Image: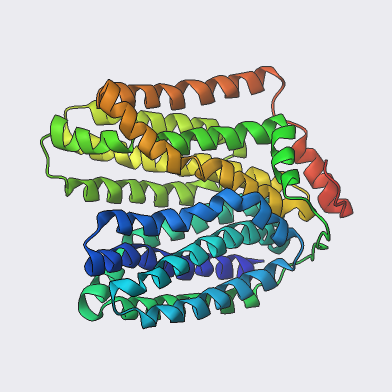
Amino acid sequence: MKLNSCLLIAVSLAAGFGSNAMQLAAPVWTLSLTGSASLAALCGFLVYLPSLAGPALGAIVDRTNRKRLLVTADLTLAAIYVALFAIRTRDQLWILFAVMLCKGIVHVLHDSGESALIPAALPIEEVQRLNGLRMSAREGMKLVAPLAGAGLFALWGGPAVVAICIAALGVSAILYALVRPHRKPVPVAHGKAREGVRFLLRYPDLRRLVLISALAASTSGFATATVYSMITVDKGLDPAFLGVLSSAQGAGSIIAGVLAGRMSVHFGPFGAALFGVGMAMWFLPSVPLMVAGSIVAGIGLPWTVVAAMSAVQLWTPDGMLGRVSASATTIIFAPIAFAIPAGAAFSEWAGHHATRVLCIAAVLVVPLLAELKRRLAGGPGRLSEKRAASESSSVQAAP
């Protein structure tokens, strides 16, 4: 099982490098050809758009062999990337936009397929630890890959970045092919997409962790506009200081990933509250404390997400893992696309201080009240016990 863990962490490194390099290169490429910031932003929008179809794409995962799907998805995207070598003028940018949309679809399949593969490849007690280490690997690539991508683009242009990304997808496909699951879930022939959402909403423990994670992620998006105002208006710093804070938050996420495996999934609400504490530290007058707050926020937010996704893997029957994990991903991350403009509009109306206070209150009060309610109701729910029973008897029905 240690080999499977190493292979899956290596996948996170390879895939994370390629994905983040392309995520930076695409808008820079668009800007260099058009000078339009709006068209550059469209690249990111197209990547995240398929997350809205997460439940439907998750149903595809449940109907196929997960490992084979992941290998095929990586090789298919690598083949699609080849089309980017044809781009020479702004009239050919539609190719880039189409490829970014395909990248978003593969990203959703990748997330749900990997979430479904991991419980079959590892002992159940190792799942959360691996999720934490994989998150550390991905966050580490967020610090390295954009710099490498920017350097390659500056030296040799977009095709150089494309070549590196194709190589990263090839490595990822090979690593997936080497994973040896210790059990093989039977694909579901006619699983309905909506069953994933129904399963999430049916059980209080699972619903609580996923919705708290969605609240924390949405709050992060809602508060985005306040970041710029607090840097430039309150602290009088150069906008480039945002890079320092982003790096600090990335460092916090790496720390969170290393420690996450030692936490119970029920630590999720406390992770959300820790994220709120980190945001509150931004109000302190000292710039070093502001940076420390970004580290704290970088620890708290990933803990919340890892707890929710680990609970999905631990408590969901094998035959539904693709749909449930994809539905959870949609619920957690899709609202960010709407929270960012909504937060910007609210900040213009109410001011950035009031916006940030509202965000802090939301992630401090709501998760802790939810955790208090859980404890008063009698501790951990029945899902973990039923998942363990399904593991031992290979039962595929919902608990």
